[in-house]
Image (cartoon, rainbow over all chains, first blue to last red; front, side, top):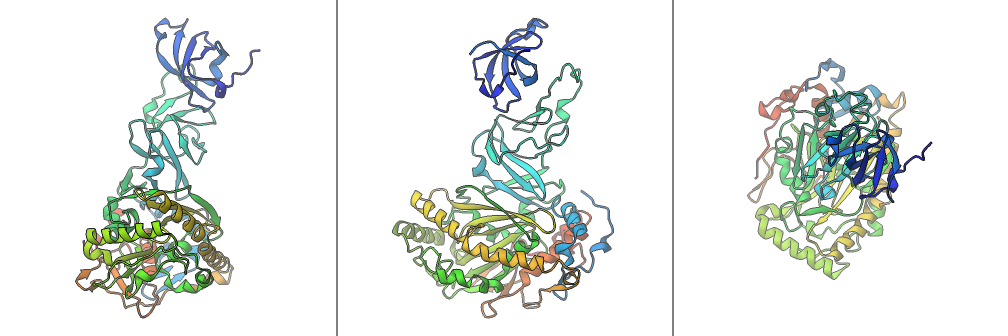
Length: 67
Length: 470
C-alpha cells in the first residue's frame, strides 16, 4: 500500500500521479490539504487533457513523482 | 420576505405610551427564537470594515445574528458576504477568523468554493456525479443586500429591505462622525489591531440600549473617572471640548436608531486636547480646525455613543470603536469590538489611540468592565419566575422630546430630547424598543418602512425626519 500523500508538503512545480494513472504538475497549492491546482502532463484515459488545468482531489493522488 | 404569524403574540410586551417593557423579551426563549427570524433576517447588520479585506483573497469571518458569514474580496476585487455553510451538508467551509485564500474548502466531503462564492471543486464529480450536478446552482448563499458605506460593510438577508441610506435616514449625520476622518474627510478611517471578542451572560438588547443613550448610568463609571484613563490623563475622556455644550439625546423612532450628542455653542472654537503627547495633541488640534472649516455648523456636533438598530453600537470619538452584540441565546451575547483610527494619522497617533482603546474598552478595559457588571447581574436578576413578571421602567423624559430642534440656526435631524439640565433621559431607549416591537409585528418591509406612509407596524405615527438638517 502506497504512503498517504500529505498535500500540505507539496509545492508548485512538483509532479504527482493520480489513481487513473494520469500525471500532473502542481500549478498551485491552496494549502487546505484537500485540493491541488494542477496541469496534466499525461492522461491515458483522455490524451486531450494534457496541458489542461484542473483541480484534483487529495483522495485520487497516489504518488509524488518529483521532490 | 413575508412572515406569516399571529401579531397578537407580541402585543403588549412593549408599552410605548407608558414607557414600560416586559422583562420577558430579554429572557424568554420563544421570543428570542422569533427575534432571529423577524429582526436578524430582515434588518441591515454590520459585518465588517473594508480595510479588513484589503487584498484579493482576504477574508474575515463575521456573524449575522447567530449565523456565521464570510466577508471576502474575490480575485477581481469585488467584496462579498456569504453564509458560512457548505451547500452540500452545511459544514462551515471556513473555520479561521481571518486570512487570505484562493478557495474555501469544506473539510467534511471536500466541496470547495471560489472567493466569489461559486462552487469550483466537487470530489468525484465525473465518476460519482457523472458530471450531471449543476455547479452553478450550488454556490455559497450570498446576501441579497450588501453595501459599503464609507468603509463599513453592511448586509441584510431580506431582498426587500430598503437601501441602506434609506434604512439609516437622517441618522447618517451622526454615523458619519464615526466613519469620516477626524478632520471630516469622507470615510478616512481604518481598523487598527485585531477584533476583540468575548462572551457576556446577558441578553443582546442590554448593551444595545445602553449605547443608544443611557447617560443615567454614569455613576457606574465613577471609579474609572477617579483613575483617569483619558487621553490627557484625566477622567474617561477629554471633555473640555464640551464646555458650554448642550447635551442632546437624538433618536429616530420610526427607524430605531439613536445617539447622544453634545452641541457646542455657535461661537465655539477648537480646544486643545490629548495633552499626554505633543505629537498627538498637535494632530487632533489641527484636525479640529480642518473639520471646522470643512463642515461649518455641523462641526458643532460632538458625537457620543449610539446604536444602529438592532445590534451595532459605536463610540465615534473617545474611544473610537464599533461594537456588535451578536445574539447567542437569550442569556448570552458575543461581543465583537472593532477599533478605528484615521488612515492618514501618524504612527505615534495610532499607537497612542491603541493604548487608550485597550485601557477603556473590551473585557480588560476599565470602563467596559463596569458595564458588563451591570448587564450581567441585571439579566441574571430578571430571569426568575417572579422577577420576569415585572416590567422595566423607561419613563424618564417622556413627552419632552421635539421633532424640530434648532439651535443657533442649526436644525438637527431626529427627535431630540434636551438633557442639558435633566442630565439624562430615556427617549432613545423608548425608540429602540418601539422599533423592536415594530419588527416583531410587521409582516414585511412594506409595513416596516412606516416613514413612507406615516404609519408604523404597530399603528403609531411614524415621523418622517429622514433628511432634515442636511
